[in-house]
Image (cartoon, rainbow, N blue to C red):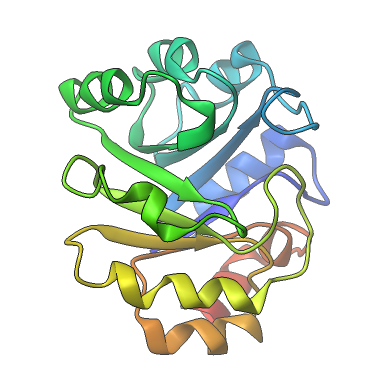
Length: 204
């Protein structure tokens, strides 16, 4: 599946979301940053809810925030496919997992470029998804970090969905293709162009 992030675009946010909804993308990737877990602060909860309350495409929400549960409680009633949080920003991780599952939404944990995969050892049987961050979280348009690919093989026997996020374009996708991942997150490569379907098709 291709999940399109609207963090950086040549159009305003509303037009970008509309173009993603009209495209052959599988999911809309929603990056929300609080200025605490990462230095950047991008959207308010009110922005996200207003902009995405009527979307036809399912949302793939990535919370780069400290203490995501209050955010999740506000966002869970949108058209959500999955919510991904960061373990080191989530003090009440089991409460978060249970709350999300209670609403029939998938829950994921993100692995930052410097994270050891073993930090997730106690959670593989509780979660649905691992998102490998192939850039440092908090800013769109960064270059792909090839060493992050080494995190994929140990995840393959965990019975979970695996995704990758950061710096994905038509060249990087050739490095990723052999791993047969479930979800590819791409932003700038798609949203800084006029023809979203063309860019998405290059990745698919």
